[in-house]
Amino acid sequence: MSDLEFFLFLVPPILAVLIILNLFKRKHKFQNLPPGDMGWPFLGETIGYLRPYSVTTIGDFMQDHISRYGKIFKSNLFGEPTIVSADAGLNRYILQNEGRLFECNYPRSIGGILGKWSMLVQVGQMHRDMRMISLNFLSNARLRNQLLSEVEKHTVLVLGSWKQDSVVCAQDEAKKFTFNFMAEHIMSLQPGNPETEKLKKEYITFMKGVVSAPLNFPGTAYRKALQSRSTILGFIERKMEERRNEMNGNENDLLGWVLKNSNLSKEQILDLLLSLLFAGHETSSVAIALSIFFLESCPAAVQQLTEEHLEISRAKKQSGETELNWDDYKKMEFTQCVINETLRLGNVVRFLHRKAVKDVRYKGYDIPCEWKVLPVISAAHLDPSLFDRPHDFDPWRWQNAEESPSGKGGSTGTSSTTKSSNNFMPFGGGPRLCAGSELAKLEMAIFIHYLVLNFHWKLAAPDQAFAYPYVDFPNALPITIQHRSSTKLHD
Image (cartoon, rainbow, N blue to C red; front, side, top):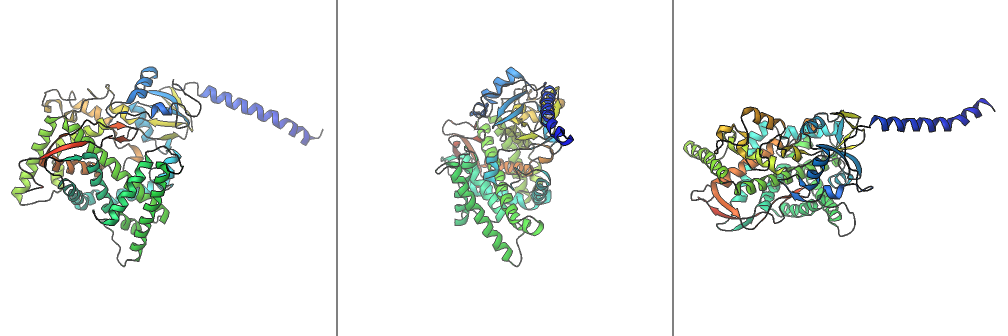
């Protein structure tokens, strides 16, 4: 037997031994996986995890698994072995180590409908470039000098259409407000114009597919959404060509700004604008609807809000000014408490999709490379060890205890408030912190300002928000409205 023949004879058994040793090492290496149940083959526990539940709870699945396994457990979700975290410390650790130990890892169906260049699914340098574009366009100076007045205009446009003793669907009205604002903000589309209304109709079909099962068959919501996606992208592409043919491009909207100040390809711009329309419309509108819902059952908060905004309104009248400015916005201190509490209790974004890119050890547990990781933000926000009476709507928890009308509030003092703030992550965190977080809070504040100054409201029919896992009011939150005796919108 020649040396070559002898070598070739030895290769298969050596490789077999190496593979066995590697598997043994990995098994030994990850002997400290968190406890949990991997469920059925392929499906795992996904069906149970996605079962709808009230937004002010963490749902039966999370409650059961936390009680059995603790705040960190393993499962099989979305077809992958998964580490689920209801631990606020691990959630922060995951978000702060984005790009080093973990990276974004949304299901393929999300990328298929939002686009491969969507900022939501991009990682690495491309995500950083797109996020920087969004941050530059949403700069503090632009929020102060341009976007505040646009938000105010669209708020007045929607609330000004509410008639005395009428029933309106608050969720639909909030979506109308945010869509009109984002359509003008992104492409200078005016509310009520035929092209805006046509785009809105296609967008509604698109959104139904984003939150549906990814079944790409004729007649399914997902297939219809893919078709609407093509229609929407065609619309944006025509707008791009119009801008390129203009002598002086409009940089006041995002489309014009991106064309002038970025090197993105046409496909990248299309997916960026679509993903920002999705993010800017959906999350803000749900947050506004949640604030209306929570405030309806908290008259003390409505009263304090009304007093705060009446003071701002009186000062405007004395100065002879009519439009809100940045100084007025900064005076809305209790409003910010209401916004924080709405985001904490309502949890518009309940969990995030991540993947470990290296082997990680945390609190003695192993998180293997390539495993899916789900930081469940809502579980931390509803954790009684972090927030006193976490299932109560208590805006005063964001102030010191003595400022609560009950004398107790939701916190036990400054240290407790600080502890709560450190575990409050409604917009994510780390390098992927939501680029539109300040705009979202501005939209909520201005909407609340005009709402409490002009209307009393109550539920017209029973309704509550559910997590599907996306947050939605099944009946669109019907409310009966009455004008206040002194009103800014109808004088």
